[in-house]
Length: 278
Image (cartoon, rainbow, N blue to C red; front, side, top):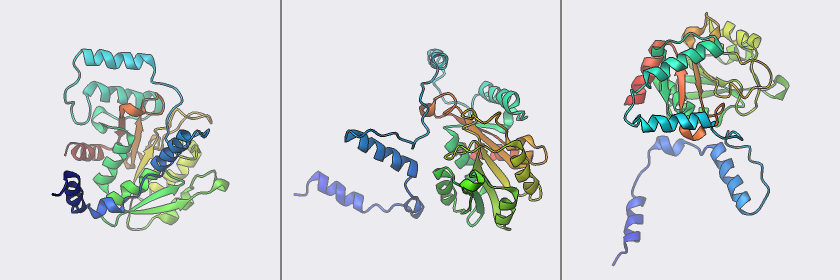
């Protein structure tokens, strides 16, 4: 008699996973985190530089507000792009902290900045579209582009350039197939921060290619020791080409809360809203 376990294993072996999933590589961040846990379990003294986990806890006033919200029964389905008052608060944050004018309808809230980025990529990228990614880069960028069947175009920027690309580097990578660029400032993983002048240099190139959209990942906005954070979307001539991504994971030590958001041209916000609720 065939045991249940044997039958189950036989059934599982017949399941064919999608080529899309099989093409995805394991996140280097997750692999590093797993290795650090294994070494710690062996008694080794390990400093893990893998997951972007703050070394403090979510502030008490935020936890108190969450408890109050639950006690007031804010536990049902939310509007797909987020509660109106939350999006209005994010709009105020963008204006106050970044000098960016995003209306409520230009903001979409998601389960973390990673989903925000994925929503944008899946809304814009078709098979064969090229996506420029300056390196070093956050490991998920590449895999998100691959899932969308886009073609990553990596621009290497070494330590001699403070791990940042220039407008000249960007223009050299642009082809008729270029659809998108993804970058972060402050940068994960290098910590490099683009200055206003350096962003202007990139904007001077982008303005010549109005069909190219840029995802500006600014989740590390407040982990910044070099001066005031500046956003690419501050430049009015490329404002309509930029999607600003942010969230609460890093600044407020809320990594497990899964709360990210975008400010974007309305046509892209609407597209992400559609991708989000399907």
